[in-house]
Image (cartoon, rainbow, N blue to C red):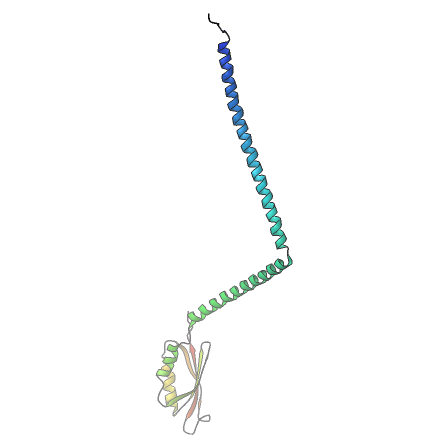
Length: 185
């Protein structure tokens, strides 16, 4: 005959419960292991980084390195000053190029209409003022030349400062002409 076990259904539930507990405990152990492993890994990494920081600080505190850092700082400040000077010079250069008061064109305009009996001794150019000194065979030629210069579009004012015979060879006149150029915007 067969034995009847009235507690059989209870025993299978107990086995299922034990199996479920094993799974739960296994997952908890796995999570704890992952946490402990990541904590250990991060702690070791932190210790290595702190050690590297101490090594770098020791190297930086070395007198040789300090001298090099000081020299590099001085060079950087000199470079900054030179860059400021360079920028100022570039600005000045651009303003001079824009101004362009005295150019080859103006000098060509001055020399192309010179009467044949006028010779230049000296041409001084200072800012917007051109001073022409020369000699002429007669004062009428000087007057014509001054009139011609006054007709140039770049000239604001053309005047004869002096014309006389005392500073020239006999029969010739020495003259001094002042030309003021128009301002360039």
